[in-house]
Image (cartoon, rainbow, N blue to C red; front, side, top):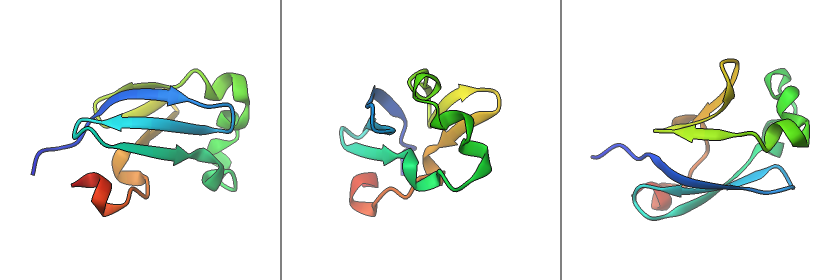
Length: 80
């Protein structure tokens, strides 16, 4: 199976990111579900959140803040 990568993102004001995958499907990643975790504290600042970038299988903000696709709860039908 070919590894999925991120092809495009659209960042929303409600702490979600519309991710377009290399298979042509989209996934709406909702960071709010991780707000309980200490590592997301900085990402809860909207101005910082909107600085997200992507490369390969990774959403990232800096060397300390990132989310790989395999850590997101992406439904199987989107991964196929």
